[in-house]
Picture (tube, rainbow, N blue to C red):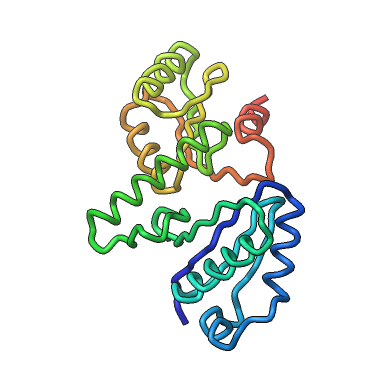
Length: 211
């Protein structure tokens, strides 16, 4: 068993080409060598004009890439074909020519890229997986702390004297909460909570609970 993950990505100009190519990948007669190299467990999925073939070994992924290029050429359609590899630390499909990280510095670099991508996505969508909730003694203190957190680059929302700061992970939320317990004005209540996607906005729940 291997944890290595490979994917052939195919982007066609028209959706019907994706239907036809996917069906041919599932039913085409392969020679014995191709069948052995591709394996019996390659998975083919389709999303409109995009086709994906998943494999657990590089040799099988490259065989799938070769087969797809042959089928595309035989059909005379335009397609962009790329071989990618899953990088588990960065949690991203990347070009197969890029090796997996092998030392601590490279692993840290992938974590940094993952965190930056997750942060950008969370800011675009306005949702974070974890939140630090703060109830301050008064509105003035809340406004001052809101401005300070914004200057630090912390995503924060304020309603009256209540603040909600977003965090990507529980560890980051706990670290932020610990710092704010020491730095926030006396009397500030600080707590950490998860933000399940199937629940209403935590800001709404937080303020609603206070009436």
